[in-house]
Image (cartoon, rainbow, N blue to C red; front, top):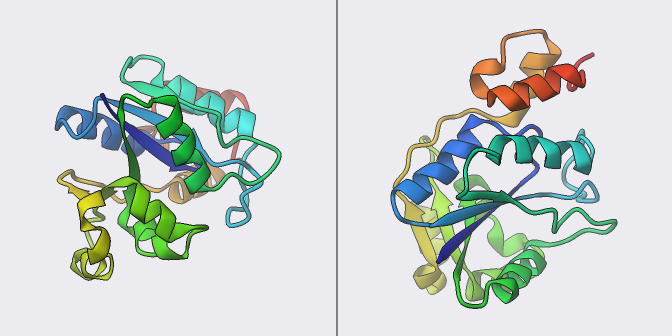
Length: 194
């Protein structure tokens, strides 16, 4: 089985996250996708809702699809780096092929990640192109690892969690960008509001 690990802050998880996962399955890049929310100890993210709340929203988003799963592996009281996460899943699913799902924006500086070259050398990447991003220079930059890099042929819209948070904060309609269950959860719990 081909399993994709989809990391992110998911603050909140939105329809584009789900569409990317389902498109990767539909186009046979993967058989299953596991969403792995970043823990709140991660120093490059601020304004994160609690680990518990983001995990709950992801579970709501994935509840109706057997090919989508959620893991709390990174939700610890210390920082968990990508190399730890990928080593963990490769060990857990020894008989399966593990891929790391990554947008071009994050992929552009993978060499700067904690043990980034180790991650590039030892893992397969499924890179999701942003519509406005020319990936050719990146593929040249990481040419030594080209066998580990697959550029997925799927569309990505420019929906972002940041934009959705701003919309909710400013009382604008955001439900078009969120699963109904996630939107209801945000409203019921008064999240992202003033």
